Every structure is written in C-alpha cells, then in structure tokens.
Length: 88
Image (cartoon, rainbow, N blue to C red; front, side):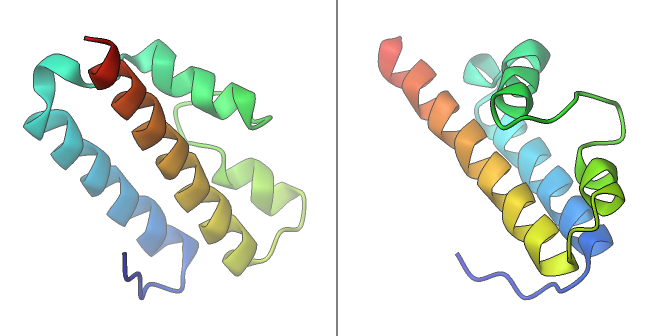
C-alpha cells in the first residue's frame, strides 16, 4: 500500500474512511466495536472515542511514529477480520 500523508490528522481521516469502506464492503463480517477495541488494548492503548493518537502525542511521539502505529493498528484489525472470515 502506498501512503503519502505526513500528518497525523490526515492519517486519522484516511484510516477512518478506510475502515468505513471495509465495514460497508464486508458488512455481515465486519468487526464488532468490542473486537476493534480489543486490538487497541492488545497494543497497549486505552479505548476512547477520539482514538489512541492523543495518548501518543502526550508521550511525545513523532508524527512519523504515530502514523506508523496507527497503520499497524489497522493491519492488526484486518488480520483479525481475516481470521474471522476464515473461521466462518
């Protein structure tokens, strides 16, 4: 996947749109809210309505590190979705 955005704000918006597209395309199989929250918890993040990027900023992470982590979180969600699809 090619990703050209360099700001956290653009990344959050992009990944939100990506998540919506996946949810719409795979509606019957999409991850439940609790399954998505479990991915965040497994990576050590508190689950809030605004996402984990604010905690990363508070810890002094660079924009590049935050973007990398947000993409890794999304990859983990996709992996969980693929496991779910394979189980059905």
